[in-house]
Amino acid sequence: DSGVTQTPKHLITATGQRVTLRCSPRSGDLSVYWYQQSLDQGLQFLIHYYNGEERAKGNILERFSAQQFPDLHSELNLSSLELGDSALYFCASSVDEGRKSGNTIYFGEGSWLTVV
Amino acid sequence: DAKTTQPPSMDCAEGRAANLPCNHSTISGNEYVYWYRQIHSQGPQYIIHGLKNNETNEMASLIITEDRKSSTLILPHATLRDTAVYYCIVRVAIRRGGKLIFGQGTELSVKP
Image (cartoon, rainbow over all chains, first blue to last red; front, side, top):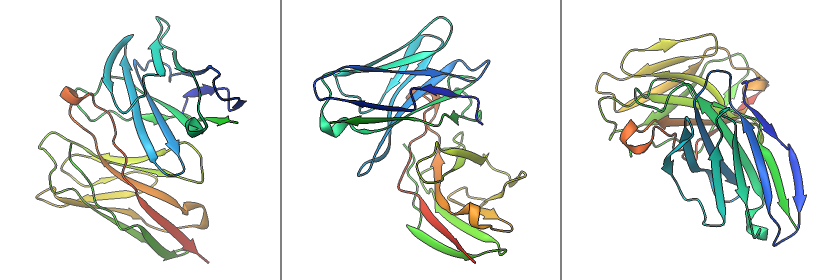
């Protein structure tokens, strides 16, 4: 158990709909990272938040957005869903923002999203 | 961002050491090498990381060459449960967000 909690574990929804994925980082961790893993793309970095502020963006679609709340949990919002958005979405956390590059990043077990 | 090169697949006999190589010739001086593994579609599991010196923990050993252009992850006594995709990652420096960029990894098959 990494200590990173993601909900829901599985989600099935229709095209055009909107969903919210939730992540609770490890106790004491200030950074939250979101990744997407689809069958043909591997693990793709989406976005990084540190202590409530956006730190880096990857290949995140405009239909997707994220935020980190004062209690440090994070939500990834996916809207106008398409079939191609079906994927595993992972959240990860670390204690710092990566300044020293030497602090470990721990991953949750992911949220399976299926768009039908 | 420093990129890594790993063989796409490897086999290892159960009980033997698994040596997984990784090339990272463009690594910068303050960038760490991380190893993760992913079993089926579970969350990536942290294994080990290092900067310059060799590192060892309860899971594995990490050997980094003196010029830091390559490294080897060693699982000393591989078991069937070590069958997974292993990712070698150079963690980007803070100016680019401190994130991990995953490549394709090495699919390790441990066979009886």
